[in-house]
Image 1 (tube, protein in one colour):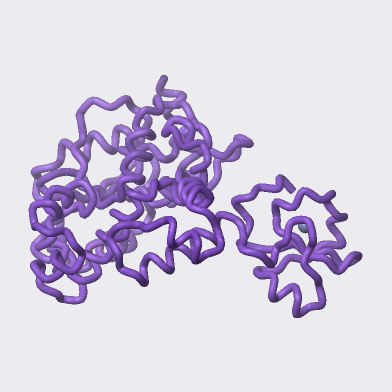
Image 2: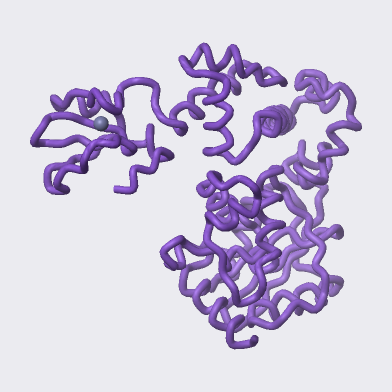
Length: 335
Ligand SMILES: [Zn+2]
């Protein structure tokens, strides 16, 4: 209904009375709801006897989402370090400017950041497959180990040597504490907090942690980070922060920017996804912001519960929307 062009390429709407199908952003007058059926692709609509709309041309190269999907497939297959946007755009029947805009809009990343993320992803994949670090460095064009080690803390969340073994050699301690919102799992390395999960069953929380670091040495924490746990439980109960919490996270450059922005939202206040996107100087990255919120591993410390939908709806929360509601209510009450 909102003709949101970001939905183009994700589905088409077909009108029974006219036998025509459109992309979501079609400027034509909206048909009666009861006459509309939805298809994932234009081909599916055509199989059912619908014809493409001449105004929005839904069978031609699609909106930003489809364009980015196609470009990402090309980039991943090519394995190149530099994004040659001109050639890529031409190949996809688009222009460099359109493609660049589409990337920023859909992924929230600039081409250079995207190329870097893809390269790091290739590097990580090679290590997981058991390739030697020096070979992986050479093949991904990092040139020297210092360049990737430089980034390792920021983007890999651990050194390449640790990553290669799926976190083997990494020591993660966790503790589970009761709080006003059920159980809280806090996990940390000696560099900082890596996970804060909320839930009901201990076993389920530990399982989530093991999924995150399949080969890390995970054990019940020694007393050393009691102070962090106490601080986090207090924040869960709406109390103001008292201790600075160091973080040790795996994140992309964009996730990091979103999470830092979320930490600026005052307690008890909320922001919408698009307000966060605007604050990042990237007003169209609303969906990318929502994804970064959904993948936040350190709830509470990065207060993704303070981000809501435009209409005031609380939207989802990895640990249950009931908990999100309660967190906000407690923060407001604590003043
Ligand atoms: Zn149309």
